[in-house]
Image (tube, rainbow, N blue to C red; front, side):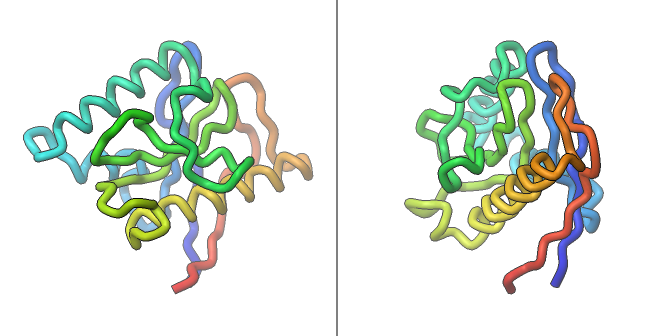
Length: 161
């Protein structure tokens, strides 16, 4: 099975731009899907408030490396918010101090994301996306200007299932 998706700009801040993966089969971006899973008044309100506070902080100061928990393989830029203890993880690619690409996330109910069927799919999508971006940056079909990613932001990922 092949999954088609794009990366789209979702929020511009003074210090950083927020992008998100958007699967062509869904109406909402992956970041929006994450927040839809945890509506106000749910058991995870405190965790969501923590994540929102981090997003606000990052929006003001930039996507500085110290604000993220590294989750992927070395060099792929896949990380999670928040860095503090939380029952939730929101996964992203920290492309630079000025560009952050969000995937999805969820409840951390296993000791590692690799053990969770749900979380591993989100992280693996980001790992593949990071690889696609690196390849396109190297061959010149994608480039970065300040807080913008310019070029072909449509991707295809073959599912392993």
